[in-house]
Structures are given as structure tokens and as C-alpha cells.
Length: 182
Image (cartoon, rainbow, N blue to C red; front, side):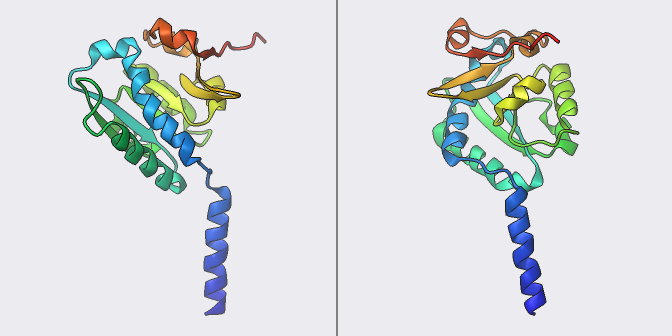
């Protein structure tokens, strides 16, 4: 029994060590802003009745994904403006369930899955957003830059490649990522 208990404690400790830590405060900010990025883009013209968001995460971050969905529903219980908000979560092996999404939110991802997400979003004209701002440098469209203030961190090259354009007001308050010349 002691060996079983020790193994269970070690497993839980190992999982918590390797699982990403997500600030509920930051998830709250993402929940408020992510919908607005769609509405401040040319994707708004293609919406019919709803803004569809797909959240991608690894299995160990299921709780954070659920929290993000709950916060989105809490902030927009009746939708926003004339649009309802639908949010689903998906693992990266079932990404095709997200074809109708306007925004694919990458909560956490393995390096091996990132190119698949970027290609999928490009082919289906879906904005990508990430909790991790470093992923903007790896092909994700939008994140948040956290400094003295929180500002959108945007890769215009990635977004323009999808023939998506953003509202000038959004661009004025954003930090724009420019790929370094090698």
C-alpha cells in the first residue's frame, strides 16, 4: 500500500511539474479579448450568426482549456453584438473539428504539432492566437505582449498571408512582430 501511495504522489507531482502553469488572470484577459480580435478583422464580414472559437491544448492542460471556455461564456453569456459565441476544445489529432472556427486559440502545444496548426489555419483562413507570446515568432498570428502594459502582439505577415486584415485601431495599439533578417 505504501508503494502504491508513493507512486501515486510521485505521478501527481510529476504531472504538475511538467504541466504548463496558466494564470487565471491572464486567461481572463484572453477570454475578453480573443473574440474582439475576430470582430476587428475582415473575418467579421464572413460571420453569419456566430463567432466560432476552437481551443487547442495538450491533455495535461485540459483544466486550463475548460477555465478559458468558462470565462468566455461568463464574459459573453448572450454573445457579443449580434453574434453568438461558440467555443469548443480540441486536441491536435482532431483539428478538423475546427474547420468552421474563426479563431484557433493555442493554449499549449508540442513543437511537432505547431506546423500542422499553422498549415490548417492557413488553408482554412483561421486566425491563430496563443497564450505563449513566443509562438508569434514561430507562425502564430496573435498573442499578448506583457510588459508595463498588456498589448496585442501581432504578426502581420502571417495574417496577411491568409488575406485577413485588421482594423487600424487594433494595429495602433499593438506591438507588431517583424521577422529578423538572417
